[in-house]
Image (tube, rainbow, N blue to C red; front, side, top):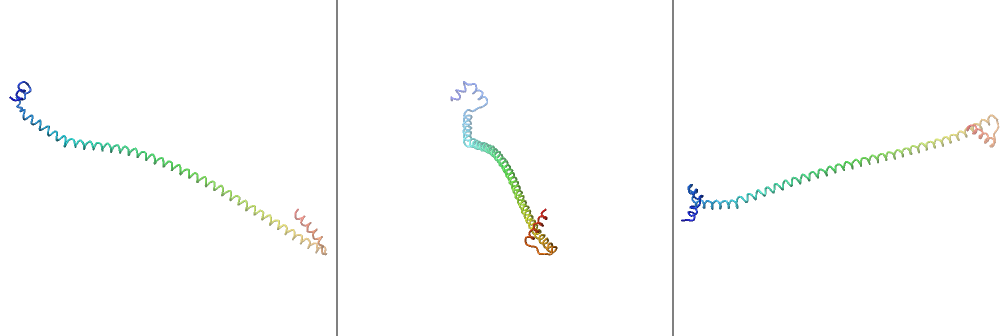
Length: 178
């Protein structure tokens, strides 16, 4: 008797197996064959596939992490661009305000300078007119004095002395001044 027969006699499982026609040697060889095939598949097929799947999962996770990091960097870049644009706008406004203030200051200076030059020109013209007026009055006095002396000489019929001419000239000048 074999070991299986001894075990079979005492065990109700073996009785049921015999009724169904189970051959223990064939079953054992099939279990060993299945185990070998399962081991080979595990080692050379299933494990490499799992490794490839794990590698792909890690790449996908890294890609998602990179995408999230890229989103953060994009948001930071947009915020920085917005800040730079805002600062540039403020700087531009400041430059514009400074330019307006400088233009206003220049306009005031130039207006003031033009006003002073105009006043100087008017003052020079007044002075020139006053000098011309004074000169004309002096010429007029001389001419009137000459005419008075000439007329007096003709009317009096005598030649006037220098002292008489001076007196008549002074009287004529007094009359003109009044």
